[in-house]
Each structure stands twice: as structure tokens, then as C-alpha cells.
Image 1 (cartoon, one colour):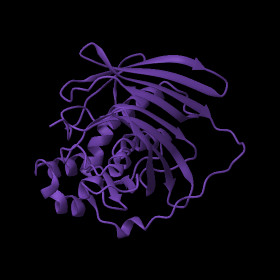
Image 2: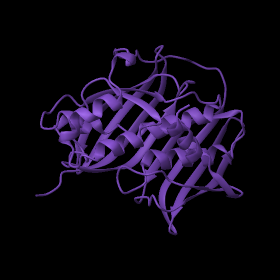
Image 3: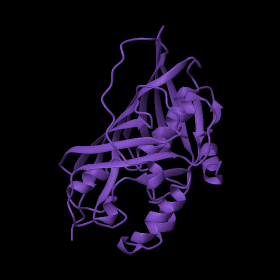
Image 4: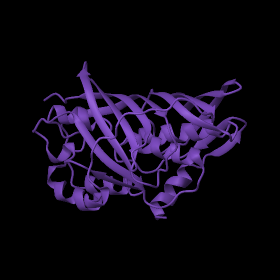
Length: 291
């Protein structure tokens, strides 16, 4: 296991400070606010720790309310909405400086058999043939608004091996393309067998690239290039089938719409052997800076 992955696992191991109240810290951020995937993953950890072990997360719906302060702890308060015979529902509010910054509702279900069908996995090259972040990012350092961004991005993503199938937005700024993007990802090291851990790790990664397809449609490079101001607004995930976040997962993303200063991204996450594991939808703030 890489040191970066150990650090991320420590970050997700929240401190219980009272019944149904947990406290978390933040890691250094690429931008001056808490990474949205971190808050979502920590909130899901908090919810999961109040749920019976035989129930796995099957969906989450969340809103990002305020930018998080990376220098301050985050308190997660869990509300036990319902404990049914098959389903358990939890609501989590993340608070900093006395104000809510994030709200999550999550549902958990005891395993049961049922009807089973899925879409066909799209084609994608073998992830091992694609450049790593350490190989890709330095090639495009000249495009970034600040050359130090390369090191900050590498540090922020060191726990995850994330590989772009096609050129990312920052590499093709000024060239509009089809609003579609694919990345392969897995953690940089093996994880324990706890299913909640793998779900939370996928939640963490899901906020990294989902709005790329919005940028591609307009030939924008994103915040790193300095031609877009953006932030996550809301986020939803459905966990369909078991998966491991320490094995290759294909994140197939597209954007059906952008309007009103907002862009919508939707995606499916597939296991390497073709199982549809997760569906993700997110809307984000996507503003073009004024001259």
C-alpha cells in the first residue's frame, strides 16, 4: 500500500465524539476548499457506522452547501431516519464553523436476490496501456495557469491510479469535442475486504472528473487552465453490484446538458470484467470568468 493511500484511509477513519456524531479532518487541497469527494466519502463513512453490518449502501443523494475550510475539522451528525426490515435510511449533515457545508441522504439494504439485467459495457483500451498521472501531467504543465499545479494535482491524486483514455480537458483547451470522457481508476494499493470501504473510496474518486465532459463540449480546460470557475452542487450515486475499488474500474462519463451557469454530468462505472457497478449523476457550477 502506498503512503498516500494509507493517509487517505486515515482521513476516512473518522473519530467518534458522541453517539452518531463524528469528526474528520481534511488533506491538503488543490484548490482553497475541501475536496467534495472527501466530504461525501466521510459522510458516507459516518452514516455506515450507524448501520447493521449486513446492510450495504445502495444509493446516496447529496448537496454541497458551502465551501469547506481545509484547515478546520468537519463534524458529521447522523440522523437515524428509518430502520426497516430490508432498508435503512440515514441523513448526515457536515458542519464547520457552526454552519452546514454538506448534506447527504443514504440508503442501505440487506442483500436479497431479484431480477437482474444491465446495459452493455462500452469499449475502452486496457488501462495498463495508458499513461499514468506522473507521465501525463508534466507534459501539459505549460497549459496550467500556475506551473505548481502539476505537483499539487499529483499530490492530491497520489492515493489513486487514474488514467485518461483520451486527452483530458486541460490538454485540449480551445478545441470543442464530443461531451464524453473515460478514465480508468483503482487505488494505489490493496484494501481490506470491508464493502463499505470500497463504496466510500469510489465515492471519493467519483467527484474528480465527472464534469470533464461538460468542459470538453465547449473547449474549456477547467480551473487549472483558468478559463472556468466551477464547483460541485449536488451528487447522486446508485451502487448496483459488488466491486472492489482496488481493482480497475472504468468511469464512462458524458454531459447531456449545460445551461444557466450549471453543467450536468452523468456516468456509469464498470468493473474490468463488464459488470455495471455504479451509476453517478452530478450537477456543477460551471462559469466562464468575465474579462
